[in-house]
Amino acid sequence: MIKTDILIIGAGPTGLFTVFEAGLLKLKCHLIDALPQPGGQCSEIYPKKPIYDIPGFPEVLAGDLTANLLEQGRQFEPGFTLGERAETIEKQEDGSFIVTTNKGTQHQAPVVAIAGGLGSFEPRKPKIENIAYYEDKGVEYFIKDPEVYRDKKVVISGGGDSALDWSVFLTDVASQVTLVHRRNEFRGALDSVEKVQELKKQGKINLITPAEVTALHGNNKLEGITVTKEGEKILLETDHFIPLFGLSPKLGPIGDWGLEIVKNAIKVDTLDYQTNIPGIFAIGDVNTYEGKLKLILCGFHEATLMCQSAYKIINPGKKYVLKYTTVSGIDGFDGTRKEAPKAVVQSIN
Image 1 (tube, helix red, strand yellow):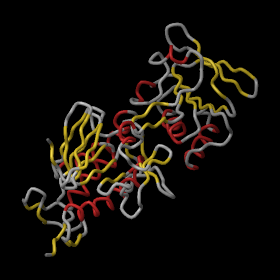
Image 2 (cartoon, helix red, strand yellow):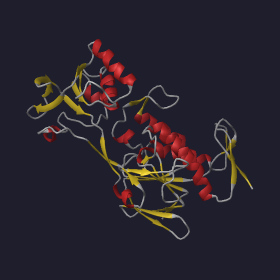
Image 3 (spheres, rainbow, N blue to C red):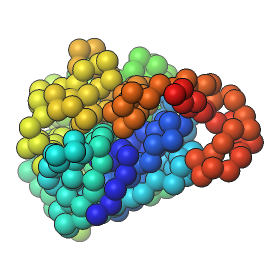
């Protein structure tokens, strides 16, 4: 039995940042994730994708963000159960929870924080007759390593942030980038749309709208696609076709835990992001509330407030004063003195 203060379901960015915020309150964390490594989508799907909305980082690769978060929380010595999926949860007489994984590993904690992102995810695939044949033969649904596309002809389909951002990024990698979208308007950030339009003017992106990719061609690998634009069929040579239509999220076993679910997300109280079950919180993309934004930085905020309530649950009746993280020379988690800037919780008896 693994025992901890806060059991975190999901080792993506929000879950990893929770380790740091909990550590400032001298609370121990253990993380469960079905993936074999920490980082969630940032490490599994797009480790080389640049992220632009992390405070203090004009641009940071998803994989580097994961590495930084792991380093930030390392001082608080979190535990990890990786490659296992949280399966069941049981409430104990003392108010704690026991979470058992699909491999039988049991974890006990007074607080559970669900930070599972989109849950288990599958790419949304376009309805093209022979697309399955070309998977791993030129059709990819995620971009893990941009160098795969070095000096290649690439066609991206989609109208969201991922399609726009990767189209911009690959102009410096691929020999030719084509972006196909079924509408003239895009769903992504205005800044990204403007960058695509500027690169189109410069001849660095071939933009085809409104249009759809309707057929794939090639013998043992992808060699070309058919784009249908207003009834006209356009044949393009290409080495890679990357449809970026988002993910189909699934909560998996967590959906059977008695939590209030709204549109495949867990409803929470914005006071502290607690669910309808006291002691169970949901933070990051897995939760929902009025005004919810699925941004990493919002998950960081939610994790911070959640940890404050977790402290009160774990230390009932104990008051504290949270000092700024610019305070230096304070006691570290392991009882040693550290000179690096840290936050500190001062208990008041």
